[in-house]
Image (cartoon, rainbow, N blue to C red):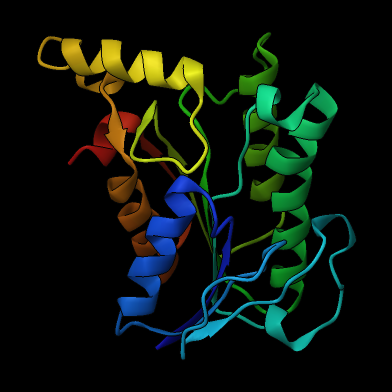
Length: 211
């Protein structure tokens, strides 16, 4: 059984990943750092902290694998700088600390269109964090690139709700790449990638997340 660090356990995909990890016989313990406490569980270690001040040398960094579902939107973050901290700086800091303490596998929920050369800030940021993760030296690195996520959020986003309705109605005729991806599917793929730890760098596009 492995010890897994889950970053972003309070988000849509993160919550689903946490449920699956806690129920999995493959996972001995889940380390889930968050800003606010999670519901207790015998397999859960929940450091409550500020992601701006991650402790560099604590025992809980010693994990076998990392599953990262951290993410926000520019609107929710309030600025491009704040968005970049959550979607770029935090995942990189977590990856570097975990790798320095022995983690061999890292799986990230990125986004469709991630490209460090993109003119679109969102896609460029996603591509830049992917590239930076690739330079850290994980034995296994998996980048999941879902499109629009389907699922019940605690915080509703008006634009996403509208897009979900439109894409949901068009789903039967849309190319698979542009269909809504259920958050549960992404969560399972994220957990599998971290636990399987297949050597090399792997990209899972949105259409492959649909099965």
